[in-house]
Image (cartoon, rainbow, N blue to C red; front, side, top):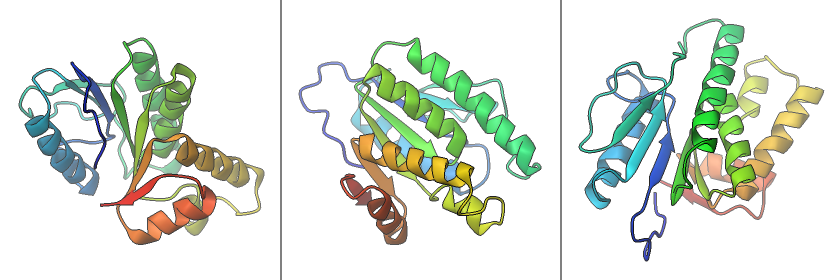
Length: 193
């Protein structure tokens, strides 16, 4: 994940990951890799991570802000979506109340959480990088949860395209995701890692 913070005297970097270690899963592993790299490059106390992991594994001087609502990815869909909303509201309020970070990195999934945080970032004028592992709401449609012609699907898709367009950079896990992002938001700055 490349972003130029040259010239920033005391950078502050906020990150949102739904899960971090010791939670299992690909999202926590990816977060761990990103955090290890950032910790090596930025000074003590520069990095703050917002997550739903109850007791995150320590990573150098990175500060963790554990949010009250834990999301169980194996829970029923409605429970998971409500959990994402609750998590997103809590993190968005915390970020809105804080000083302007040099950089905000928002990881999705959790899609609904990420969208709420993006709204706050846009309203407050924060630069953000959006890190994607899935393209929403297409995932919901592919799972048969939302119809592609439904109002909710179209609203979510439009919101996602704005999130891509507003981002300083959209970091995708695969070339296929990058193509989807570019199709929905041709002017977006996309990178595959």
